[in-house]
Image 1 (cartoon, rainbow, N blue to C red):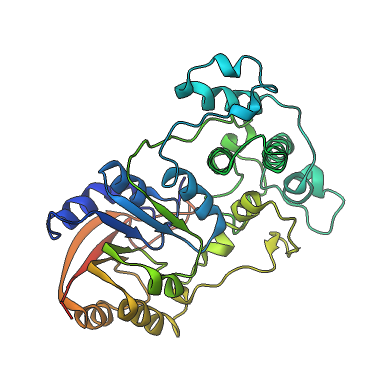
Image 2: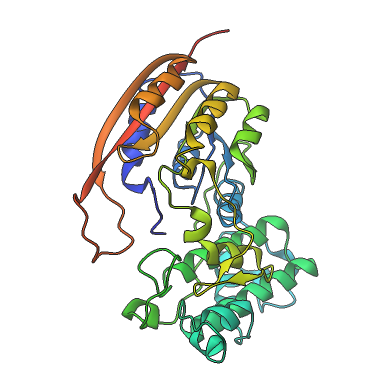
Length: 354
């Protein structure tokens, strides 16, 4: 996914920096603002036990699969519905289930009715986040997954895998510049194609992992970890606004929506996106943390100043920082920015013993 603040291009930098500081006895890695789970996935592949959290439900779904699932999925209760599924090797069953869902009949549902031109043509606001076909296909797959869960044809692990796969696939065909704060007036080339329901990767592991859907400042009081990795929002862009449709696809809860863009009326607002609240929120988080090491990813355009970060993190122990230049995230390639690159700072604290 093309995600605000994604650390995909910085994974090697993060890993090399973090492992140059920590001791050899570190086994647990807490990704407190997990987003798409890109950092947690990477450290899971390096044999760390992961604690993953994000307050957005679509993020929770992605991480319930990528972090929570450690084994190939059996889908035993779908043997009667999907022909020859029981004969397929366990390492390929998930492929067969996705192929089956990729070819089911379309259905009208919440996404078609509210986020496609066909579904909104007679409504106050006409929206084209997806083509009619992709919206219908998305609804059909999402409703099928929910019915399977309710009649116990799939278990929880299989459920999160299937929704995670849907979120990733439909996102690639959204008719947006990148985020869901607005849609394009005409269907762009990539959005005009019918999406394929391909499976999300499965990361096999043997470590116990935990995944939460909580407010980070509340959850932190119950977390003990070797490495605390913090990657909070750093500017005023609320993730609940920019990814509201993914939240609705994940929950499929028929929410009350408002305005031209169909925003969920009950969106979560983060204190880390508020100039007035961010200092106290971050200070509270660091003070309540219980870890051997703290690492904070934050770029040079964030609401918190470098001095504020140093002041807060130094209170917990020995402070230091790494720095790397990288390409700026652009939601709109036509938008002119003062620079095409920005700087990522990885602040760290070696926590002092009490």
